[in-house]
Image 1 (cartoon, helix red, strand yellow):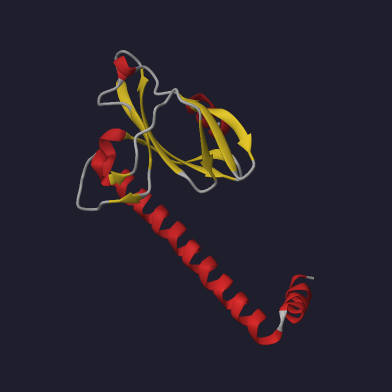
Image 2: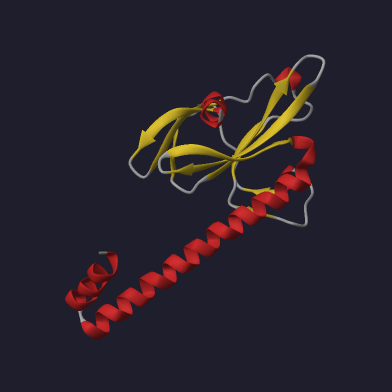
Length: 159
């Protein structure tokens, strides 16, 4: 089900280290209850309660672009029936060179989406900080005991 959902929104294919987006489907604009758009999300401004809380650049949905792994996209598209139209929001992350839906929520719940997105971004930033610290420690260990000794210790731990 989730693969079908993301496949109807983001068209493209895997590339080394990311995903090449060929187009983003914003659904039927006539069924949307608000503006439809797609943007790369870099951070969240918790002082805002609308789409401007999502800091990042808007995307041309018909232009091919390469997105690296870890990229977050917010796509708000028109969905539903003529009697029950809605704007549906999707927070999509490029993971292992494919798009994955992290959040699917009615756009009228902007605050819920904003709060969930903030948690995800903070978690991702925490991982980046931990990786940077691990790299720093490995470099320091190499300086202290030498590359061969560090590789030997890692090999012993991994096996």
